[in-house]
Length: 305
Image (cartoon, rainbow, N blue to C red; front, top):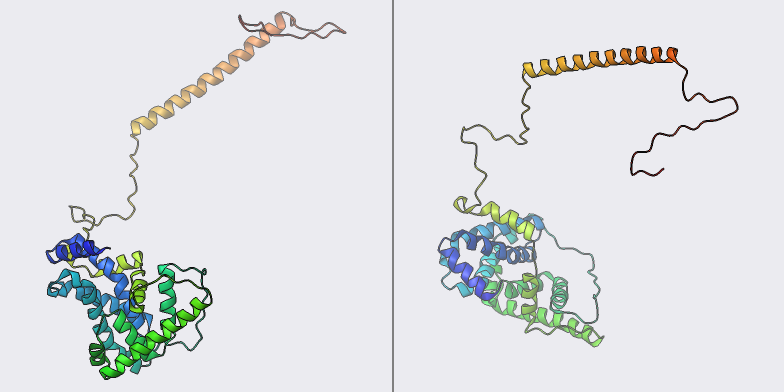
């Protein structure tokens, strides 16, 4: 969704346009889902928080004064809610940090924008926990180091230093890959690459499932109309079989009996007739001794044997 379409959807959704709100939430799903997965320790927690944030978008959209700020507004909305539960989840032992080394290979030596963003994401995920968290809050949530410090309880100067060291580590590794012959698509900054990766997180089927479950009742797609008589609609209605009238069945049975009788009479008559003819004269086509006669039917006109 480009900038103009996004602004239009925000404006229309604020005025109560159901389709605009639906499109806005479907677009926001990929952003929120990606950010939740980067900030929360488990996928289950991320799924729950994604639905919570989208519900907040519906209820708080009127507080967004400038539609052009939707992207940063959504990032802050997601970051704040994720950080509220992150500490509790970690205290309860819900951690998704993996100790296994991360390995990946390049699809080619010349990477497009999406592939370059993917490399930046993988290198960021290899950072230590604090560096990774602060870099994602800064890049995806568009939060300032001061705001991040307020959420994490870390001094602003420390947050600033961690963000700077994280960017240096990622960009330094990408520079070493470039020296080995890998060509990256240029980007304005590392945060811009990470935001690109976030925007390339479509999941249309899952997005529809979540969005349609949280839309206000009055904006959902109309359900199939129930039967007017108040009865339940049959799941698999079967066509009713129309019984045949008894008079029709009797007529069919009578005709079958008559046809059987006529067939028997015809057979008996032909048998009697054939017997009489056989006794009256010998067969005209009886072959003479030592000869073989081949009887051919008379050819109809226009037919050549």
